Length: 455
Image (cartoon, rainbow, N blue to C red; front, side):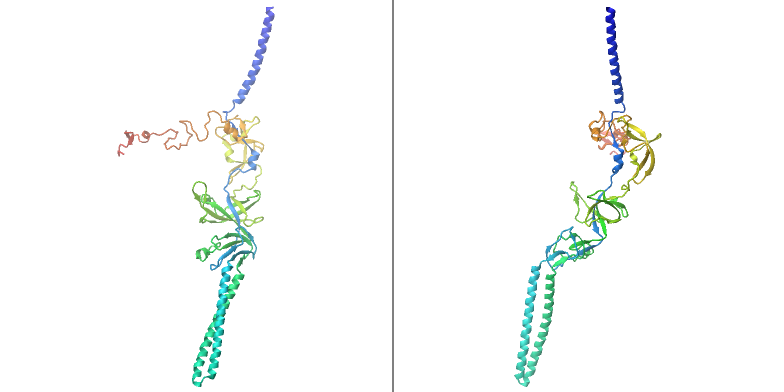
């Protein structure tokens, strides 16, 4: 009886040990798996998405399609503008109405001229009547008085001749006034787009310096035909623009519609009155430059565009090209950090092909496919770290003890960096005291005094 009970107890103990052993096996295996790496979560990106998109950033400038020819329509400084029929950006045809003068004042001037003409006409008629009277009186006068009447007649005829001249002058003035009223509406001299309109509609434009400006007229028209593109840059970015630089021109409404061109000229004088505030109480001047497009297909006068330097980014490369900063160059070969089948990071060997110096891209001829996921080679990555494709996971699940960017534990500092706290540090990141700076100086009332100078 005792022997049978002992057998049962031994069987139960053996079963428990087996269960515990199996559980321990799986626990240890999972702990070993989770123990790979340093616990850092690594963000990875799909290679296909990377090479399909933009691998770099480039300055972009605002641009607008302009005509190579700009005609200025002047106004008569002696006249008053009555009405403007167009706005900036309007497309006009040759002969379209641009603006009109105030005809009310012109009509009053015409009426005054006509009154003056009538007065001259009445004067001539009166003088002619006087000549007739003098002739009748001379016929009946004695011979000794005839000479006096003859002199009166000659003097009156001279006045008539002068008044007739005044009459002809006044007629011409009336004709010009009538013509001005008829042509009170000024029309466009060519097909094009209204580029600008003077705000001061009644200002004169006799300034010789302003007259040398092709856009100094009251209304400036950009001619239809050969186009150029005017770009605008800030004073900070204009230094990145050079004459002869190749550029890519992008449509603002269709990113896939592009043109190529070359910067033909740069205006290093800032445009007047165009400072833009950036929210800091300061303004930045604008500078203009001009681009000659290789073709003008589908370009529209006045169309707004983007301009960016052409570094070859528009040319689609066949194969896989990665920026050089993704490549790990070691004595044993070249590698990238790649996600493996267990969703962990591994240092994978790759074979490099050609190098594009302009874009700093390496061709990957072996070791990587577009379906793979790779990580930026952070110095804290270790073999076996878990990976994620959600960048928020990296920031939300930061391992304990890791220092957020911008913070540093007391007494620690990366090599080559100096904290921006006003203190001085040696090459190892340790603070330098005043005694270290001036070992031969003595302290007097908490001040450092130089032994030689006493300062």
